[in-house]
Image 1: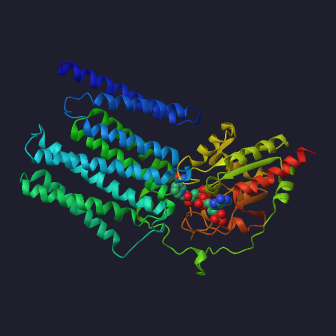
Image 2: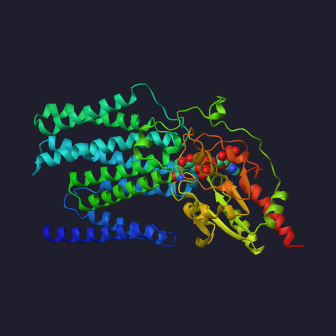
Image 3: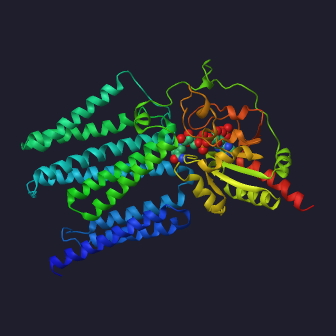
Length: 477
Ligand code: NAP
């Protein structure tokens, strides 16, 4: 095959793959089409990989084969054994490895040019994209590893602030920029080597120090921002090696990550700058005993499964508000069963979904879809809140931060301004949790002590099974 024909074939296949990525992304936006969208994007990626192997620059397939087999085995193991609740950690790691891969591509290209085997047509452009690939890849790698350690609770989820932190970070950024300029404009191989060493190390340090002051409650935003950065790094790597489909895929990941980051910031009513630099979560939680404004006082009033059944049996409007605890106890199937029983009993049932409930965007949607809860019963926060005063019962299943009224009322609360589902406005609120555990932000929740709230203690799945069996015994006479 002539090299011209080969180029045309490769680029045509890249266009097909890019169209499939875009179509797949579009379909991922709706639950009904999400699985198909995932498949279409996956096939697009397979086409891109296979066609790239035809590239005339590939002279030996040994290591590519080893990489493909190792990646496939690791991917299969992850898909089989990683729990749904650990998905955010996995996404953090995948983002990190994406960043590391870009860094390695940038470094390899640097050494190729330094070795004198490559003479770039546009040296300034090539050196600039190598710099950006290493810089963004490095920040993404260590930032993601730190986010992983926080999510996996290997490191404290609280934000870590020290005096002069912004100054130190500012200094690191300036040094990174200066070493980048020295690398691009100096033209001296020795200066370039030192500059590359400096900005590689600084990028790795910056990733760590930028994520350090961000509290656990803000991790969803950080993960989606790092996801976006991993896309930008891949895009830059695409320019470095002149691979069009990598540029397109990197752009898509980069921009969709920015859009998701924006949605998450809106869901918490905070700006990205506030998330990144405010040190959210540094103030001691009220549970530490400090007598601060916003201390939560009151009595927790337990309720049994039998009494919960009695309340629900009389209810006509019921809203179920799932949170992270539902994911932990894997209660989604019994939640669906309870919903069906309530409907059979004449109640109208809705599932209220908060955009950052759980530990990853769409976490609750995924679990409820897995349990075959009808899509039409899922209601978004903005749509359910106006209806909340008309609800006879709100059942809060392992949710805490996303129903914390302090976010709306207590100006001293670190989560003040974050939109919540107004569970407290329902006539009766039944909260399912195991004990007095706080939510991800570490804050107490006044909802649990309100006069209209009752606490159904225990693992959510077990508690719900208790209520469901009461309904079953009613049905069996
Ligand atoms: P949450 O605030 O983390 O609260 C979860 C509650 O579930 C805890 O209070 C816990 O209390 C209870 N729980 C845990 N295991 C349980 C079990 N087996 N059975 C019953 N209850 C159980 O959850 P959320 O209201 O869903 O809020 C999500 C939080 O995570 C937000 O702060 C959000 O910013 C953050 N976050 C979100 C994402 C995302 O993308 N969605 C990612 C990372 C972080 P007990 O210990 O007393 O049982």
